Image (cartoon, rainbow, N blue to C red):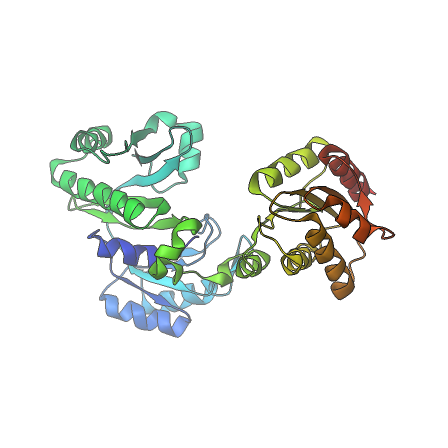
Length: 378
């Protein structure tokens, strides 16, 4: 789950991270009122959206007067950035920045550990730095049971060549990043940039956080920060029905039980030259209603022109999946070709239920995926 910059900064404040004074506005009038409380210029007006590239899209503007604040907010509010409409802006006190530093902590899937990254190339996408100048990034793995060690903080300070007055500030920020990651079950905590001011102070000028969906049940205060306006509508709807769904860009709607089988199914579709329209795991305990709802969500994507079911019935009974498909076809009138591979518990009953329908039943995953790709390309 992603949250907005202003929400991430509120969390960092609780952990003692120094930040510029700021507040949120939802209209140009509110932005002007917020700017007046900051007591001076320049003021940054920043779009609040769950995507990167705000600056390149014109979603971050510097204002040097009340009139410029109003004009900036007017221009940013309502604009579309990567398909998301800006509904809020953060109005923030400007700063005199001498250097911009990157500091973040991510889960490294190769090391299977959280890793703190610091770079002197702050203020730009860290992915670009990693691709063009990987030597500018220092990686500090956080070993289980040890966490962030003092010698690693010294490594970071030396790597960044920080002045003595700024060293304690960087150490405090790195400690805060580690605490947020571990205490709140974050999957990403990033400050880009960390600013070194003309007074050699260290200040967090931006903040980005993602959280592990699987841990939100024990973090109600984080779940409360969810902004469904920023999410893919079908993904938000699927979550309400306890379905694991991710929208993709293809034309073959995939409905599978089990995340691993779902990934394998998408790989098979790609192997035969097709493009999956989604990842969808109906879960191990799917009932007819769940299957019907999943089918309705998949077919709500207008790009979908073919549906592929791949069910390996263990806990999930194949006949219950068949019931769900028939219920959905009757209820929402699906006229798309449906290719199915149903194997496992009550497989024979499922075949009896589906006998005489226009569904295409094939015995193997490869045959079903190949047929779905053929139909999708017609």
